[in-house]
Image (tube, rainbow, N blue to C red; front, side):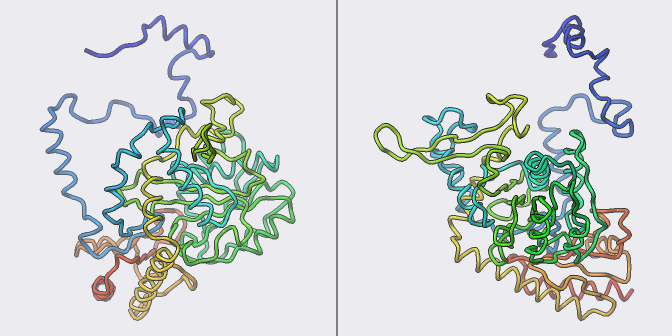
Length: 448
């Protein structure tokens, strides 16, 4: 039996209350090109066994990252996740109420979120971090909205090195409230170009380091220029492990850090769920989206944890809330916290250094191939190369030989005119044999 909670009269009354003539009026902001003319072409009815077999057959067509030489990055990175992480996240101490509205029965949840916040603040070099957002792209969008509230200005200048998907997600969110975005043209090494675009109406400058092409940049000079103009600096980081080796955003003058934490404790998972890291200066804390957990003592003087700040629309602020973010990525942040605890500061630095060494070895191997041009001069574990052929076609040719050679930049920005650019990433999971296989196969493909 279908579940029909509303009668036609109920719907009519609800539409009248909000001033809509029909349900179609609720979707006026969705472009016609994005709407379906008819239902999705799927079987109307199928048994559980049939569905299971069909999905397994689809999954069998995938090439699994851990089974082949793998050099893909571009915002989602393959790292080793210790078995301990999966074991600990299933312990009963952490399987308390997912949303910690009642602290007395959610101490496990609140404690690890408090520890998570501490780790993120230390990692980013910032004063305070929240209990996570959905992912790095929505964290960037929230950062831009936050900057407009703080500065009371309405324009964001975005570097051409910021991941195109992050830019698209941000524009999708902020356009609804009238925020103007000025996105610079894609550039391998031009983060500082944003300085010339800063004006009296600039709320924030958004840069990424390492950027989407892998270029690592000291953004201190950009921070100084932004602050001199009364704007905020937002630093985006898509590869959290890089902060174990590079100068932290806080040390370079960032006011807000929006990062993707997937690299630590969380596997690729075919695109998610991931975890957004968000940190800022203490003076901006009241405008920070999401929620903040704090440490206190109970009536008996025992250590305890509370939900200190939660400026969400679900709570007392309602329409005055700083954000419509309704939750944090609880399980993913727990996995992050456990992996960080296992690594410690020394372990994270060693892991980051190993990433850089593997990337250097990969760079040297590819640079020796005729026709391959290395575009990224300063990088952590990812760099861009220019090929003498269409990069997507080369990737497809190598995939036929069970080698996942990287991400064509054209996949991220189809109209950028950079169809010959390939993003290549190496991590601690990359074997020397993988590098040799990639270089040999790429040389043969380019020679044909």
